[in-house]
Image 1 (spheres, rainbow, N blue to C red):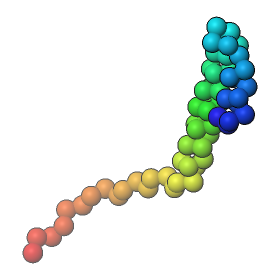
Image 2 (image 1 turned 90 degrees about the horizontal axis):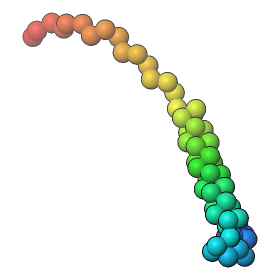
Image 3 (image 1 turned 135 degrees about the vertical axis):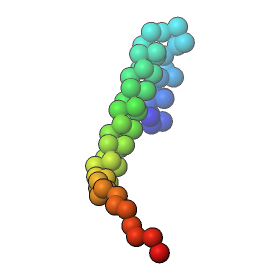
Image 4 (image 1 turned 180 degrees about the vertical axis):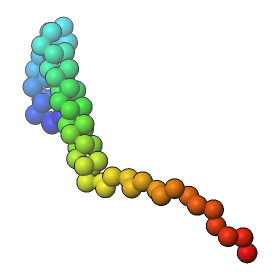
Length: 60
């Protein structure tokens, strides 16, 4: 959340419902943004390659 967002929120009194609504919206936006960034990271990673079936090797 930006400083402008907090400045707008400070304009409302502690008893005003709008202050808490703005806070909840800001937290929701922040969580959605983090979720989008996290999903972008996972898209770039290659999928796990399946390992071949292990076979018994020769004893030396």
